[in-house]
Image 1 (tube, helix red, strand yellow):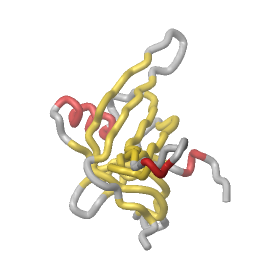
Image 2 (spheres, rainbow, N blue to C red):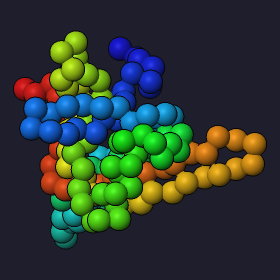
Image 3 (tube, helix red, strand yellow):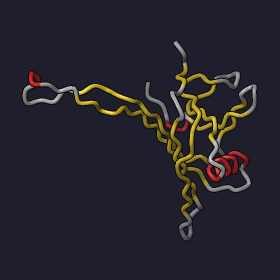
Image 4 (spheres, one colour):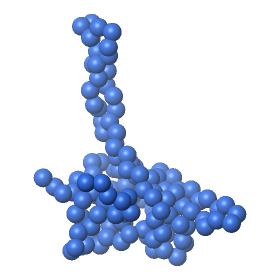
Length: 140
């Protein structure tokens, strides 16, 4: 069933008990799942190539209103500057504040960019890349 995009949020996961805290001021997020294309064409393939998926990758782009007082945004900035990873969940939480639908993953922060247009609220765009495979919820 179709749903509004604002139901799927980005959460920073902290602590041994996995506390999920949403990024403050989130405007949008975009999840990207890709696989390398491996050419397995041979002489019998004819005019058409034949491919299979190779290594997979998972990335996330998120845009928020820039807020240097938000603990999660500060954690992302610090992780970027200190070459550390962050644990992230993107999706929907259930009633008990645990993952209901989405993916959880350890991520390296690949870029953080601030946009400061005259007459507009400052925004911050962050690109994250998974370190290893994400965990999909609900789990089978």
